[in-house]
View 1 (cartoon, rainbow, N blue to C red):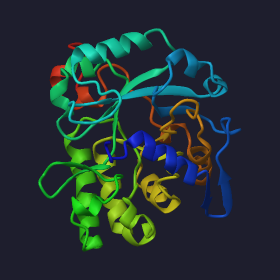
View 2: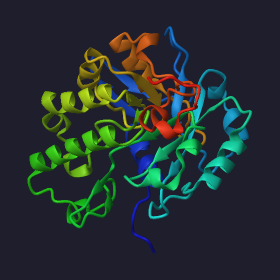
View 3: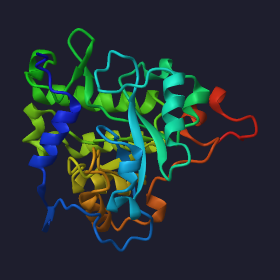
Amino acid sequence: MNNLINRRSFLRRSTAVCAMSVVPGRLIAATNEPAAVSLDFPLMDLHVHLDNSTIEKVLDLPAARTVKFGIVEHGGTKENKYPVVLSNDAELKARNAALGGKPVFKGIQAEWTDWMGCFSPEALAQLDFVLTDAMTFPGKDGQRVKLWEPRVEERVEMRDKQEFMDRFVDWHVEILSKQPIDILANVSWLPAPLAGDYDAFWTPARMQKVVETAVKFRVAIEISSSFKLPRLPFLRVAKAAGAKFCFGSNGRYPAMGKLDYSVQMAKELALKRPDIFTPAPDGRKAVQRRFPAARPKSATKT
């Protein structure tokens, strides 16, 4: 039996543990319905997976009447072990065709550093956005390590946790600066050996380094309602730096659209429409801005 925990199982357990989470001044509880909100921008959940479901079932959920979903599937080489991994143009186009005509945004959750070689720039430009995270990390042997799996210390040097944290922040910077992504998801998540000391490891200087890189490369920061992250101090640094934000449930059926934490943080930060990421029009997507071959001929440089 494979003793590795896949990300889906990990997230199920994490969501259960985080069903109630304390934030400054109040207690947030996860609910079965989208939070009642008074925001000046429409609600979008841009981190939705169709695992164990169909687009028809998802769009029949009550949340779909008040939240627009962005449907993502893992994208990259088959070395990435997930129930479904899109690995070439044909698979990506087939997925997009299945979502064609549906009132959703189409995205991928890019995996590792070699995902771009799986797809043509033109095929990636058909997406509304590309999302990724920093949770898969280079191990001692240079191979990919899923930091949420047990006994991660055996494959990633963590004897000096502060030194590991510096490498982890540099990994965020590398992803943000070298990959044509629109959204960084699960921002400020920490592996289990560090998670209990979040405030000690996410120092102001480390927050600033990640945030400044995200702003420089016009990458939105996800406010994750599954992990209840980033915490408010990190989000305040991002808001002060002019970052864009988006909401994500990382939802599997029927949990998509549950955005209580995201909405609460938006209220704490007094976020307005200009602060919120919206999938860019053709010619201005990250893959088109950073890879001219993907840019339509009529588009001007941005």
